[in-house]
Structure formats: C-alpha cells, structure tokens
Image (cartoon, rainbow, N blue to C red; front, side, top):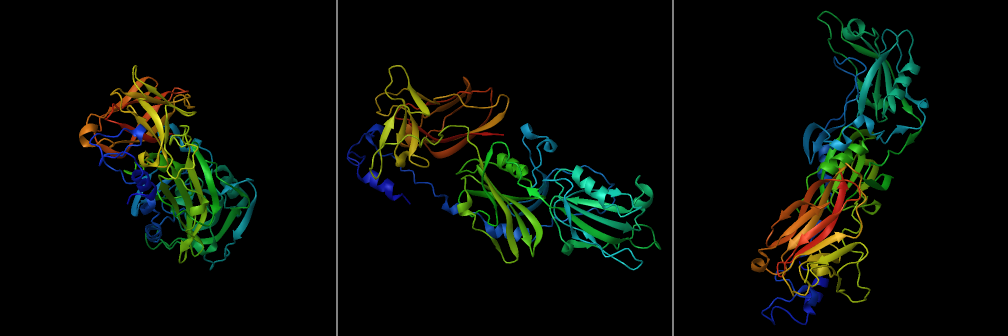
Length: 501
C-alpha cells in the first residue's frame, strides 16, 4: 500500500511519465519509473507467544550435582534456545571482546558490598532423621566445599565474594557421596553452591536419593540446606557500543523490527549484546540495532533469561508485555546500539517549509557532502523528499540530479569518523537503483571506499531497497566514501551506520 503522502506527492507533479515519454530527473521532482512501496515494519512485532511457549519447555535449572570436582571455573554464558528451537551453544563473542572474564560484571544482580548478605531460608536440621534438599535453580555458577568441622557460613559467603556475578549461596551437607568423602582433596561434605540469581526455599528440589556406591551402600541425602543472598544490588554496566534506553521494569518490549530471540542461561547483558552484534542481517531491516533483556519468573521462580533482538531501536513506550498467566516479566532493560555515523539517515537536512510533502535538495549540509565529477552537474546530492527515501524523509542520490550528465558522484561524511584504531566495525547501508526502470538502471554501480581503499564495488542493476553489510577495521578518524551513479542509472543511499564489533 502506497502511503498517503506519497500519493499526494505524485498526484501534484506537473510533469509525469504519462505526459512525457522521457524520464523526469529527480531535481524536477520526477516520478520513479517503478514506485517503491514504503516499508511496512508493523508486521515484524515481537513474537511473545513463541517466547512464552518456549519458556515453558526449556529447563535452565542446575546445581552442584554429579561427579564434577569443586572449584571449577564458571562456564561462559550459553544459549539454551534460539527462535523457539532448543539448543546448547556458547555465546558467539566477537574477537574484540573474546575474553569474557575481562568484561566486568554483567549480572543484573551484582553486589554493592561483598560481605553484606541476608538469610533467605534456613535448613531443616542435622538430626538423624532430618532430611533436606539443595537448590536446583537458574544461573548456576560453580561450587566449593568448606570445612565441615563447623557449619561454615563465613567461608561459603567469602567464596561467593570471590566469584564474579555471585549473589546467592546455597550451603548444605551431602551424605553418602564417596567423591566428597574419599576422592576430592578437600575431604569435606559441606557444599557451597553459587548462583547469579536469588532463589527461594521453593526451589529446594534436589533431595539426593542416588546410589553413588555399589549396593548395599545407602543412598545419598541432603541436610541443613540454607540460602544466603546479597542485600544490595546494582545495575549491570552498559555494554561498550550501546546506550541503555530503559529499565529495569516489569514490561518487555512488544515492538516493530523484531528479528528473533534467544534464551541465555543467566542474566548477562554483555552476552545479549554479543548476540545482537553477531545476529545475521534481516533481509528487510538489516543489522540488529537494539535488544531487550528480561527475566521470566513462573509462580515467582526464575525460569529463563530472554534476549529479544530488533533492527529498529525501541524504548519504554513499547515495554507493554508484562507476561502471560503464571509467567511474569521482571528485570526488563533495553539497549540501543550506538551508530558512529553522524546523521546516517540524512534527516538533519530539512526544507524549512510547511508543505505537506516537502521537496528540496542540496549538494551538502553539515553532516554530508556530495562531490561532482569534473564538468559534472550535481552528481551527488541529498534530497528531502519522502517518496525517494528508504525511511524517514531524506536520502542521498548519486548521479546528476538534473539528468544533465552521465558522470558518477561521490558522497562522504563532512568529518572523519570517530573510531578506535584497530577496532573492527560493521558498516551497513541501504541502497536502491529503481528510479529509471529496469533497462536504464541496468548499468548502475556503487563503490564503497574506506580510508582510500576500495571495500567493494557492487553492480546491482535495477534494485529495490536492499541492505549491505561489510566488516571494516578502523585506523582512527576514518574516511568513508560512496562513489557511483551515472544518470539515468541513479543510485540512492540511506540509513548508513557503523557499529563496533
């Protein structure tokens, strides 16, 4: 469906293809030979039902069970589901942020004071007939054993202090486990299991009951299982290259530009950013530019950690999904990817008119500059005219705006791009070459130049709006250029972005 503003624009043209056999050049407010329908992003809203149904299938609960020795390093954050499919994979962290341990604390439940804990629940005792259960919960980190000469709460909480992201410790005795009694060097059966989320007595579901020695040896069992949580918590740091747009709230985004979701095994904002950075481009909207991370609780128990990804940034205004049934949204935060390109959508160029459909053009303004070939006439320009644009109202054009020559033009930011030397970036832009029709646009070309070196030359011919992505390495204060267009093989460029990887 063509927008009302576009119909008004085309209806008011003094010259049209119906009246003249020749193509009307863009500078004369010409009508494209093929009308490009405006993009409709409203059909790409968050698939909340798929997220909810997957949350009820996946099991992210874990604890200090099995034959794993104590004091193991905390595992990297893993993905447990992607777009409704259950998986088990490590987060694909970009090479520039490969060392997860060096990222700083990303848990939403990070302590302010390492020794400030409170009792969440107490154990049931250590009498001959007392039985208890250990926590099986989300965001499990690791465990140690502390001296069992006393019920050593202080050493357990000190261990939590020493492990990044730990905010909860479950201290309990496990009896009839030969690995604890005879194999592991500590020779203690007092386990201290750590978590990156706070749990309750309702999650004490590991009662033991396993035969860890040949019959007739007794089954293992649990006693005196207590839980301790950090009293004071802080927000996670914002990932490099992002800006926090809202949170924490009890509402998840229900927004357009939705690309899909992933479940991760703990609340890890940086891991969610890594997923956004490495998510494949949407064929319509391009790269991931925004993510929403939130925790789901079912009947008050932490269940999943969701990372929803979008190619259109959003904010608190669309955080209206509060959950379904017994599933509630908690700890919801949104983060927008920072674009290093100043005014990559050219919207800073306006006509300064009250016309219902503004129309104006220029060889350059404060953010971008077009340069013509020798003897060329406005071979690179910026238009403010909604029918030509990919999104918004403004767009860049390569090729003589007046149609007076067939020479290429060059478009570039007016200032070097403020990058970090040695850092890798994703360069993205949207291109179209449909203005003059299939035959005239057949020779359309566009070259992308980074610091004087050609990144690629594309020969799209006749093409509707299409996203293009490249990985470039910065040297600091980098230079970007787009060269091409040779009227009537016009090339339009819009929504240019540069994101750190």
